[in-house]
Image (tube, rainbow, N blue to C red; front, side, top):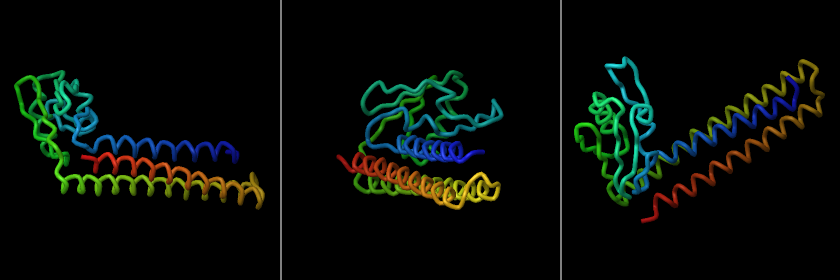
Length: 188
């Protein structure tokens, strides 16, 4: 592998880590109904013999600003979806109406908002840890390229500097998304 493609690969992995963090942030509720609050909850479906995400088992709609509607493709999975939502850490309580679930999204209390901010901060730290792991892989790649004589000593330093710049860039991007989510959560 040449240094340029190694740099691009490192950047791509870091970008994906940020995208994953943003996707995780979307699943943290802010008092407004959104399909993202429930779509990635894992549901164990005994009749299928596996676990699936709710978005793969049902149509998720938001008919009202504070209501989520989940309509399973297979009505026999309604109870399994209901159980998964109740057991998740979202704090949502679905109402089973036979062939579909209605999930009211209550207003968040100040204490619950603070808990959500802690959760989001934990998710952001997980993303930073992923980025630092990718940075380490990039630095190891620089050493490998140098030992393969694909890089000179100066080339290795430049490569490592580029990886560090990418690390700083994507860490700041996570911090920016975190700050926006915190503001959104704490806004009443």
